[in-house]
Amino acid sequence: MKLLQPITALIATAIIAFSTLANWHSSLTLQDTKTLQLDADSIQKIKIDVGSGSLSITGSDTNIIKVVAQIYQKEAHDNYQLSLTNENAYAMLTSKNKGFNESTRIDLALQLPSRFSVNIQDGSGPITLTNVKSANINDGSGSIDISFIDGDVNISDGSGEITVESIQGSLTINDGSGSITAKSIQGFVTIDDGSGSIDVKNVKQEVSISDGSGSINVDQAKSFTLVDDGSGSVNIKNIAEKVNMNGNNTF
Image (cartoon, rainbow, N blue to C red; front, top):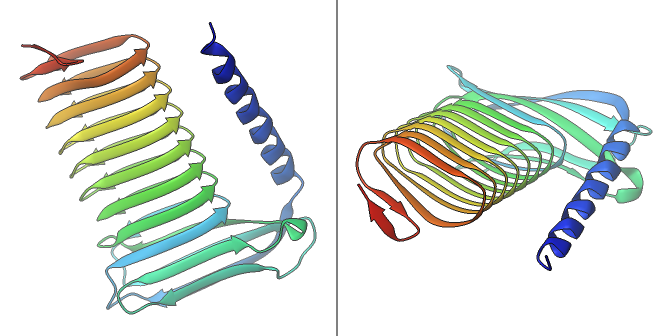
């Protein structure tokens, strides 16, 4: 019973913070739309450092990086940072609010070469990413939706729903809270989760999960390891080889 008190307080704090953020976002209106473009012939990767706002990234058969930025503010001002530069080894996209009293939210839509490795440092807002070489994401809050990645995907997330599908490499997720869905992963799946349901299906290699609370469902994998589980049901089926439940091997 004592454990429930801090958890309940944490949830209440998160709800209040989300409500405050939602109210702040709803008070902003679209003030400007800007387009940034960069030749990507000699570049193989992009680093993205963004604050508040949605982020949509699509890879395609192109040699151009194109960014469409929608700028939301209470009143129009230029006290924010928005830039796309060539840093020799990589492209750098930065989008940040400079002052709390002149708040800005910038929604970004990117088109870039599908050969790109993508590294994202994100404050808050939903992320959608599809059809790139690999992805490394460090996210504060907001949903994450990833699909059709040729290599590995690594996600470190504070809160928000995570959906990952059709990954040719391995998937690693370190998550605070929010549901996780992973489907059609060719490599290994490693998940360390605080709270929220976990659903994993059709993994060619091992699935390894450490979970605080929430249900776990795994269907189709080479092997399965439950490293640690606080609370919630665990349902597994169609495991080809070894199953290890909290250190106890079953076959």
